[in-house]
Length: 83
Image (cartoon, rainbow, N blue to C red; front, side, top):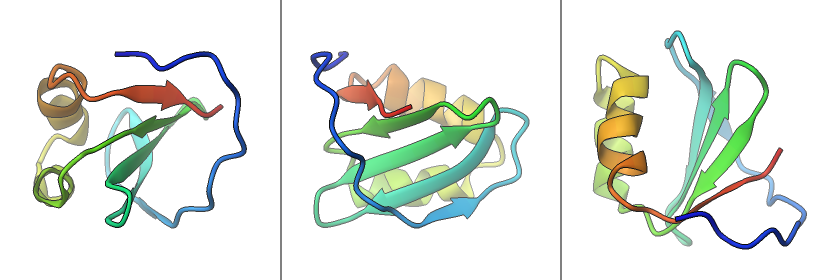
């Protein structure tokens, strides 16, 4: 589900570089349950209300892109493109 087109200043989030053919880095804020994913082409997305357990599983997954697609994107989490 794509959120409205309202632009907002992204909150600073520490992202960890990952080994992936499609994803450059991943960050997570447990207080807001926000997952931030930076792709190799510089796009940055926030996925909202993502449980910490899914973030942990994503970080441990052998295929970060495959996990993101199967469990976050297709899981129906709200998201927004930050840049």
